[in-house]
Image (spheres, rainbow, N blue to C red):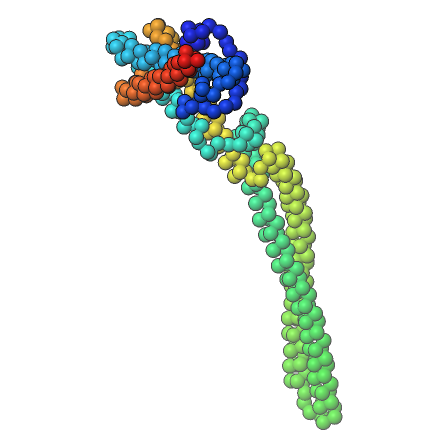
Length: 366
């Protein structure tokens, strides 16, 4: 408002007007035929001057700010080494902290918050919880193996029992065949002896001997097989008892596994181990991340303290660009950008001054 106040010291109201305009965008004075048109014309000129004045005031403030910023860069460059050294060291530490913070933020393999919260909840149970689940799963495999082995042995004994039953039936059949054959031979020998008056003593001896041997062999075989069948039945009973015992263990262990899977919200000990390892790494990363944030705040405050002691225009801006305090090239780039900004601001100020002066000349002409 300074430029405007210097011109008139009043604040005109915004008005609208109609009519032909000249090449500068203003009404042609020759077209004014009454006081109303002149009033609208004057209002437009005053509004144009006010807008230009406001813009110039804003540009002046920005120009002063950029100039102060540029002066700060030159003041920092002129600092003696015993002052600049601690500032440079502090800025370097801040840069390192910011890089660590940025690297962590860019990582894509972070745990989900749900998994991290789960591991936090069961942290007191670990790693004993993993060992317990792993033991239960290993025992489950052993029990399953025992059940398969027992079932295989049981089926083998069932098969042997059926086989022995068939063999006993065969022995019984052979016994009756031998008995019938012996009786038949004795009858024939009897007929030969008394009907034909032949000497059949040798035949009787051979028949009785053969029958005795056959019956003895069949009797021994029958006893052995019945004894083996009894052993098979006894073994089958033991296997059934073992199978029932192992099955009870299997059911109890299965229930334990279901409970542990539900408690730790996993499907296996392998998954729990993977989550736990990720959690330990993630927790360490998060602790380093929190420490990095703390260090960043510390070094920013320390750097801000150094800059405030220099009595520069804007100490706060340097905590957001510490690279310029460490690297001269960065400082040169900043200074170059500030110079270009000032040049651009001067062009805008000159343009708005021309607008204001043109409007003032129109009023004088009026």
